[in-house]
Image (tube, rainbow, N blue to C red; front, top):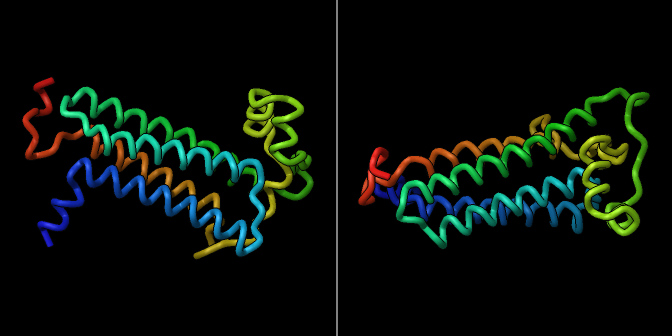
Length: 180
């Protein structure tokens, strides 16, 4: 069992497994969308983009597998920042879902239409600052947690563990914490 844990905790393996977790999350989102009829709201789509960004950073960290500790720590910071940004979107979504019916923002047009009419910058500003009434609906939950709550937990886990694993050097590596 210790050998399995050591294998999984190797930085390259850990990063690749975290990338696969992100792929699994996107596959789950697509399953819910296309097979369960859960149409994503704008904030749901932004959370997907956040998971994709975190996954790409993990994949790059696994493929590049930097030998210098400072370079590994760059990946640690990038993973943490991307997870914080995604978690902030999840938090906004959770906040909108918790609003009483009379305080829910107006529904927005579909994301593609907003991008076509206003461009990405204005669309991002509208979705992130104002939210959308579409985001208030929550028909799915598991263990009393809605989908944005689960995604927030994933962002926290991916961010914290990714930061720690890429910040702390491997035992078998040639460098040490103070040897940069």
